[in-house]
Image (cartoon, rainbow, N blue to C red; front, side):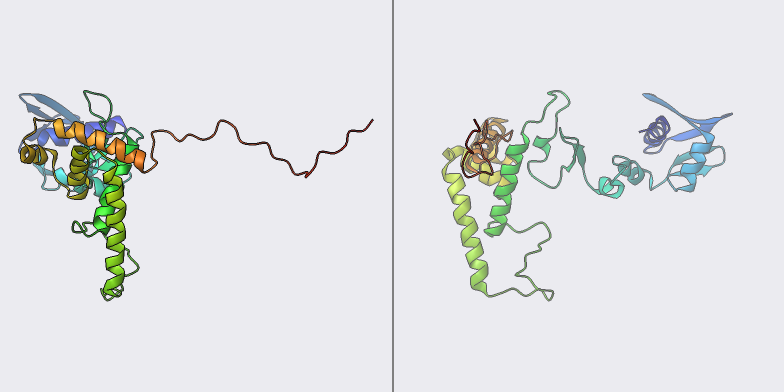
Length: 253
């Protein structure tokens, strides 16, 4: 991000919620007890034209669209998604919406710790459990469905087919959870399947703070192993020797 964009964001952020910037020779300046921000007149005029700022004589203040504009600046590639979502960067650099998944916040690197609490293969295991719970009709679907059993009119196929899909999903989910310790299975199902918060789980079970977080990670690691997921893909050290000749030719003397 360029310095000009950073300066513009800082200037608008300093104006919020109801501060005023005064015009000087070549720039506008806004002073707060905890912050000082300046922006060239040309940049301020551009923000006024875009509806981010409002001009009042020799002063400017933030317009109603200022907060939405700041939110869009979080992602240059997906500005309007950034406005309505809580985006954060994973270790891989990919953006994740913190409102989309119960595991999303635990998959983002912490500023203090420097690493995410959950590794990618653990998050993938949790997401698979969530999809299984949706297919098993244990929770109401919160995302768009492209299930071919739904038609354009909204009708479904025979009820028996839907029931079979739910039964199959419950069977797979039960098989995964049976391989986990009892407490781990319960927490994984509550968080990933029932979309409960960790604090809610700790209150219901009378556990100390942050204990459910640890149990969840252990359970997701066990679930990932049951699903064949690992931090790194590993193959055989070397494959068998193969050749296109059926038999080895005789050596010429």
